[in-house]
Image 1 (cartoon, rainbow, N blue to C red):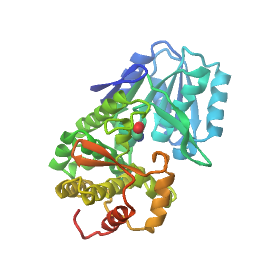
Image 2: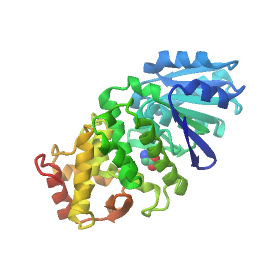
Image 3: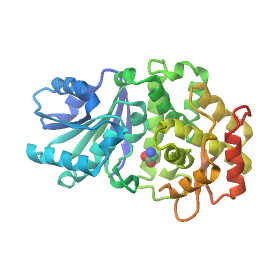
Image 4: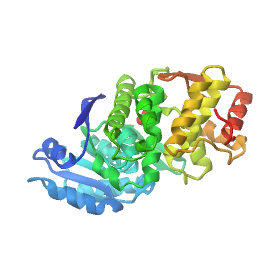
Length: 362
Ligand code: GLY
């Protein structure tokens, strides 16, 4: 088992391994009572998990699957369940599910009694390397995604890779986009490992999977430890975790949220690789390396489904663009992100044109 320390409001450990969830949870929970918040689709797994607790009273709170969980009414339902159970500050919430579950349950934990302890047990690759680590919690409203929430760190995160065996191939590969992102922004070792076996890297049973997951979490831990609340606004701030996300979020919006997040981030990283190259900041070979790795693990690297104006408008309303100017995280080298603010429309249009060309190498 590997463990990574995250320094936030308090220090906590992220554990990565196989067959670890019961042992780690029993060790941390001690004699507390726990409420397991899980989506409907995890009912059986949640039941099995609850049975492994020794001498611990458990409450099960079932929420809708995926993004349907991230609403004010589901929050209210969880508060009601905790209230009826007389859930106290000595008790612990355990979230079991993907990123939507950890986001919702984290916000429930942040708000109940002004903050109770939570342990995240992410069950998808995307949640292990991104959503469950770093303390971002929240829900969606009619006005947009993740507009309401809090930074609220868990007391531990348990990434049991057994859960990954039941993820679909497409969902697993979608999660790899965030792992590759961590490689490009900070840890070239991740890229070297993936390049050594692009086919093997596409599954959870590859010999290097625990290492690339732990290294991606380490990248996130380092970045979050330096700028938990994303206030720095510099090339060492939390904003660099949004590499590929400004364009990626626009794609998600244009596609009415039917695209996997990782697929949108993949074309988003390709877009900023073209942009950085056209802006004279990035060596063409590094842009080509994006294409080789992302397409090599089965992620999309081209996009031409919307008029550029649509994408541009969608990028402008992305909450991560600060003030009136569009901001992109771009690379100067592997491991050296920087901020490109207010690029010329001509440059954006040229990068978008390159993104649409399937037969042209980066
Ligand atoms: N998912 C980006 C962040 O946690 O900041």
